[in-house]
Length: 305
Image (cartoon, rainbow, N blue to C red; front, side, top):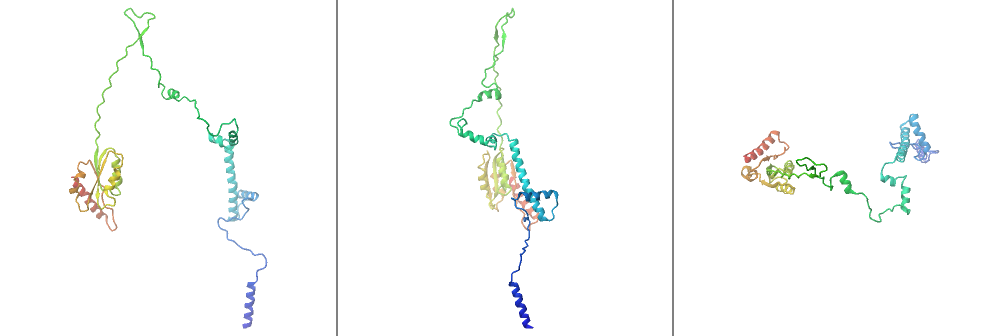
């Protein structure tokens, strides 16, 4: 029994080592871009698949893919040929096309090498015969540089009436009227504006808008010293604008009271903008945020009063 099992194992090992006789078939899995058909250079084969796209249905996705590829080849060629034919049939009305177009460039190149054609590069200054001043007089300003119209004349008639053939005499010219004096213009009033919290995310663009306004003559920017961007830096940047406003910065510590420190900043202000405030932090309710920002606005209002 043991000998028979050993003999069977030996036969199986020999069978595995022996190569299979005849052609070997290898099956490949077709992906989405895989097509089984004629190559792109086979005109007749692609034409047959393109006809089958319109006349016969595809039996499989692989066949449908090949029909689409064949139709795409002829569609691309047809569109390209149609565009080229349209250019030859009705070329664009362009001097560049008439010089370097497919139907004109042979004659253009030949003219450069012939003695009768124009040179490719200018050998002397180009002269133009267009009389620009005359065109301006006729079209834009007809009376530019023209002669003044002759004054109207009236016949010199005495008490006996006008004699036949009497020469008319020129009418006396009226004395020019004096132009009325223009009333002196009132000086334009410039306003003073203060932006409290002008170094913050909202205060910076708001300060720039105020500095760009021609009606603002003085701009005060106020913020705390703990701000990420100092108020002095914002004022230095805005001072480079070509505007009549004078920008000045004011900074306070966190413990300072605005009513004691902002007298110069707020005195004479026509407009006070208050974008100052704290953003909402994690764990903070809306009522907490309202209480903090209301306190900031209260301190600024007291300083303004």
